[in-house]
Picture 1 (cartoon, helix red, strand yellow):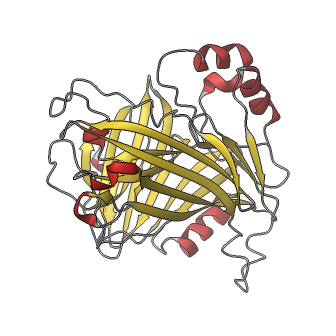
Picture 2 (cartoon, one colour):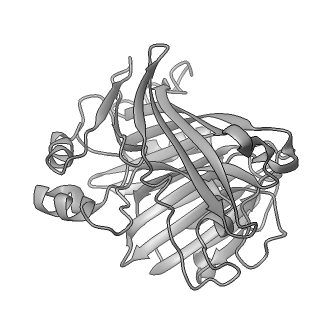
Length: 351
């Protein structure tokens, strides 16, 4: 666990919470923004996630968190879809992008319920296309996620010395009061931010062609072959891709070098192609059905890679006023050969 990160945040007026898993994993939660800011293997101070360099000192943390700019602290965050409704106040014009402060950072409260510590944020926000407002509540909590390979026979020798950390994240979204009658649809959008320069690995049921939402991605960096999409996230600027719900298998990995070792982060989540996936490409708003996305940021905004997934929407004609999502993060650190072996085992033999 990074005590320096905790101390810098405390000095900047932002309290943190620590979840200790039975397997020794430590999860650092930041109620400000409702984020999982850090993921640490037992006895390790090395964070698997990217955090904003502004948090590296008390002085810069105070300046950053005291500013009126959007404060991307890093880690695992929850936003809302469709992006065109919540982040483009002038849509269909794309001249202004603004992160709604109602849910980032929001006003998350720490609530103790049923032996769990939850982060709860209730807010009212407008949607651009309908010009209507809705009142929503997001609830987040974490729990254990034991190593998925712990019962696999015959591989323990190959994994000697590998560090593991994992957690389960529980996220819910609920329409409140008269908003249950809304004609708009909206869904949870969870993503983790990781150090830039790695490879995103997306197993698919069949060969699929990712949709490029924006930016220029060199052909050599985006490879869809067989039942695997590999996205080398290192190009300058910002780029984003999306992959269809009917193709995705509900597990995405990210491999990156870290010092003398390599790391692998895997998000394990549920995909329901019968659900309403309402996030759409900015210039093709009728093309629903994208469950999985990735965004490469290597610019003045920072240097990180985002692994993103969506949850089927509530509201409108869905017949649902609440959704509950459960997803795991599994993280490993070891030699390049060991990490590649784990990726082949948990993601695809084509890695």
